Length: 272
Image 1: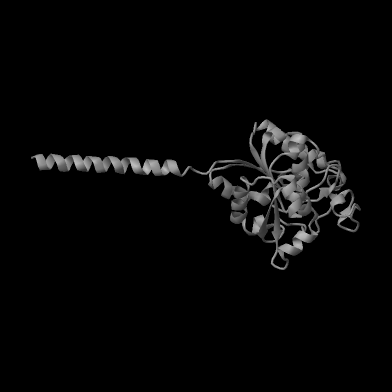
Image 2: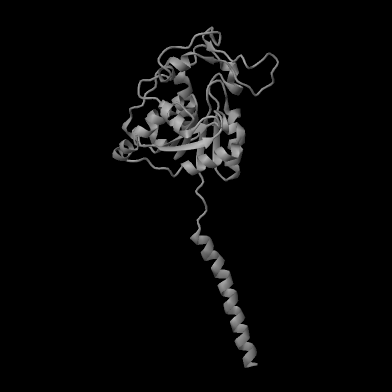
């Protein structure tokens, strides 16, 4: 009888350890933090272009907002030559304010870099991190035209106050690109709020197979500005719309970028 009692006690002791150990192991490996992402698309596109990437982020447990800028995507019925960069900045600022979002991870792709720059200059207190995805990185007072030499492009793709989208044919079914007001491209952006300048930011270059990372670094003015500001630089294999080529990979890249921190000015200067 005594032997049975000792054995029973031993079994209880083992069972208690079995119950406690998994809980301690779980405590030792905290679940990844859930983020609030606001994704801003590029010129002539829409939130639709980020649908698959957004779905992967949502599946990972994050909250995701895919902004569509006025006149584009499903808001093409609002298109006008009077739409400008400030309109698009207001779109995203008001999305964040009216959804009452805080600690936002704000991402901008291509022309969206101009938009998110204006957004963070207005409401830096709502932003946790900024990710420029193959995006324009302007200085204060620059337009996107300034990033490409300062002259407005000419030719049939720029007519009637719009940048046209000749690759979209009559009868093409949505989603597809939409012509965009030229005023979006010649309006300068503000980037001077001291709180904005201190925000952690990541610049991601999408590098296609036919171009080396070294070559891209030498020719990409946005990359060079990001380095000068001490931002984290990342690269991702793919074309300019890598989010459509590899949406899972881009979603993971965005998630990993959240913990990037800026270098000090001295370290940034040494990296040049």
